Image (cartoon, rainbow, N blue to C red; front, side, top):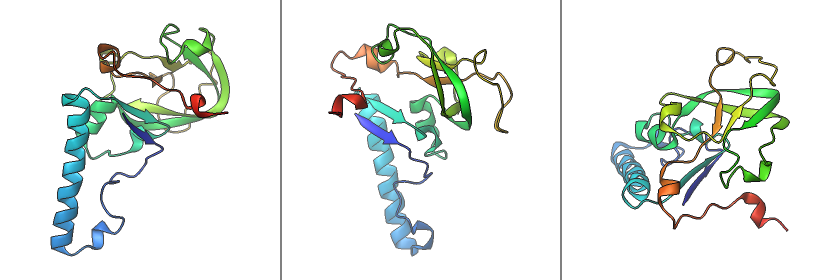
Length: 171
């Protein structure tokens, strides 16, 4: 599986100094960038492997339409404050640990934007707007759709995929 964690860079596969590269080096860097992106599409789309986005991964690669389609969304703002996370699918292996109970927390939640559509995803967790203060923090309209977690449909179609929680690596 590929894991993206807190990746906010819109061009993570290009060198940091890519804007100052001579034309021939820039062309080579962009060729490598395209090859890496194609390998991700092949890894997930053709090979049926997994892609997991953690933390702000929907902020990444916003100029790459296919990445938004793979992730199911791009960044559309975030909440910071006290809120309630609603468990929408308590039977799923990723959410079973909550026992169907909501989680109250002070944190930040990244809000999904286009191409997000609940019709195309299986939402596991969402912000419970009845239990949340409803402040918009200037990013999006009040009571907008707030899905927080969803698996790609492939996860359940491929019995060889193993889901592992970070906690399994803790002593």
